[in-house]
Length: 319
Image 1 (cartoon, helix red, strand yellow):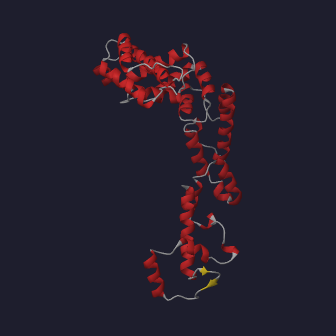
Image 2 (tube, helix red, strand yellow; image 1 turned 30 degrees about the vertical axis):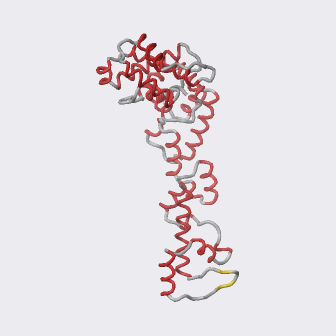
Image 3 (cartoon, helix red, strand yellow; image 1 turned 60 degrees about the vertical axis):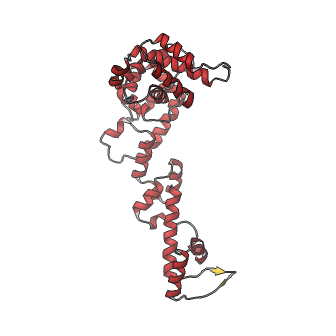
């Protein structure tokens, strides 16, 4: 998208230069004419639908006119918009050419908040001389530290004043950040159950079909590779949160946290059965309905059948 805006601005500059200088393109190394009557020029533009960009490029004279547009010559709003599509590495390189634009606080603030959606420092009164570029470097350093050691990473954020040691603040930081290693995150949440509780409450499963809600849950809180106490804890917390977000469905379908717990395990086992290449005889829809209703008798057969169809068509719930 940034390249498109760049080209649009470049084409506008070329068209302006073309209109001012009235240069015709070279053909076979020679100029065909030096001046063109306005009527002929208008007739040509009318026939061709406007000036050809290729011809405009060929019409530019001198090496001093070649190359990219100087962003400092553009309106500040357009320059900032172009640079806003760059990542941190490219923006650092751009600051070597356009120092004032590349170090613009608005750009670095956008990079910080788009990568780390929530930090405690965002809600504080920033001191004089505060730099979002420096904050970005600290957030990046802290994320790399977290991916090596979760406790040291959180400690780094707190030492820099980026986060406060409160379960809700830590849960929001984890929920809105995508740069944290899921294995280190699983270890951290297994140790900090208070943060896990707050992280679960940040999910809104209203009007979501059960398998889709479970997928959304496992995108933020990755399921362990093996069945154990931690997986049971996750499914238990999910079951209560799902029922709390869908009171109408609970009344209509007769669901309860225990029933949702059973259905979640059934969906996980079905996902493994249908997706594993080692399972030759896949579970049929009839078998899934029979096994699930045996464990959760109050659930209707049609509802369980829709669960099977969702896994069969979309895939695993805990990938």
